[in-house]
Length: 210
Image (tube, rainbow, N blue to C red; front, side, top):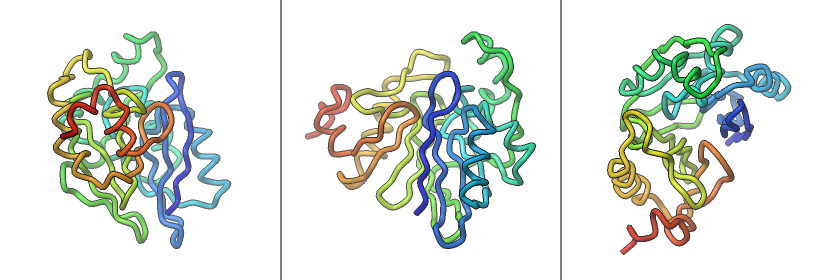
């Protein structure tokens, strides 16, 4: 499986180009800025983008979608519950001191249990709300792209509109903790980690382990 990791945008978001080694078809998870940088990696490696995938609708994770939609022939997929965040992306950006973000077009809504085929690999969508009402994670075998649900040693903030600490913790317990301990977590900020390490060392999560 192809996994290319980039850090993009002013808030240093973890953006991932994932896909199929055989067909070179790929999806871009959380293109939060630096669209030219993302496109250059895709071109340099001879990849064929088919989807732009949003783990959630915060502007720092989808700020590059509009520009990529202008240059790449691929669909933008995100949860319906975060549609309002996408609609208000400019207002979000202004709140954080940025004013040059364009609203992308949502091509399709995704929900828990959906599967997304990228060449010969299958991505499963898991609803993991809490950071936002429509936060999702993307699972491929023993790799999962969790957005701002879990970080190494921490969790996503829940004090922004639509956030809920209780909901986030329940998402981790009911969705992520059901996966194998050796599952690798790719977060929206910071380094990758494993489910085993977060169960053991993450102070927000280790009390959930019986």
